[in-house]
Length: 335
Ligand code: DC
Picture 1: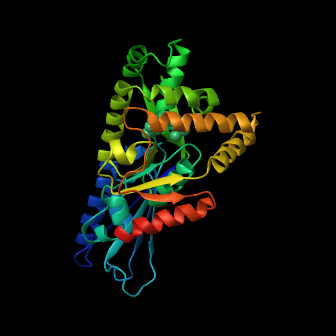
Picture 2 (picture 1 turned 90 degrees about the vertical axis):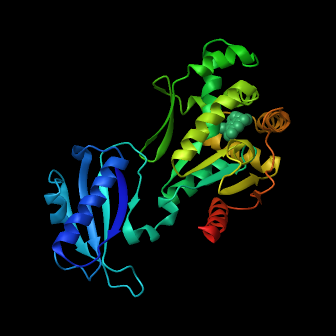
Picture 3 (picture 1 turned 45 degrees about the vertical axis):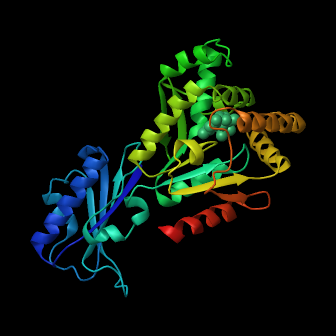
């Protein structure tokens, strides 16, 4: 189940205005989220206490949304709050990334989710990027794009095809035809490669190293970076990777570079793998992590490095909560 939020305002408290505004709001929610009406389970409205003329739920029914359960409630009268405002939550049975819709004066309510903005989070393995990126994306209701998963899927496909990962031409031939989807299931990101869910398999340590090799190839990187840009230009998202702030989106609205000592980073990866029931040797894992850092930092095209305008955050002694709230405070300063 996914919830799409939205709000609008009306010029005056009249039946006609309410009917018009509700119809406009719901139609935009349907079209921007490519919904069919039968995918809507329920629509819940709340309106400010200065609206008396008509129930928004009734306006929804009259606008053709009669196949789902509809409900309207009145909000508390909050000082300084937006006047004549109707808010909505649309519950849908569809696996989508919701596009929330704020119209008329309600546009000012959630600038963070209505205008497109991109957050770039780069850094070495184990610096906490993906956990933090995921959390941040959830809090802002925007897409989380794990660009590492894309390189990992390429590496898996190359290995499965028996292609040597250091053979650029052979790897690119595979990457060009790859059918790769990043989908969301109950809030969890899944990597679907040629129709199969490979989310777990791409986390294998042997894939980590192969992904690092595959990502060195300029043709592979150009191709993947273009795909990442296409997504980021269409919708707000948090992207994590190695080259987001320097190469993929040098104009990103917010740029962060997370790091931590190799010891701490290796410990995080170790704990993650052990929690999944994997038997790993800590020292081997740390050696491999440092080797991968070196490879990612020293490749010719778009190496891992701190962008000049990125905020550097050493997460060695910080909890996830602390990192998330620090990044949020930086974003809020400018939103
Ligand atoms: O973030 P990760 O560990 O899932 O990334 C796996 C590898 O993919 C990493 O070692 C380098 C490469 N990568 C990259 O080169 N550029 C990105 N934007 C993301 C990952």
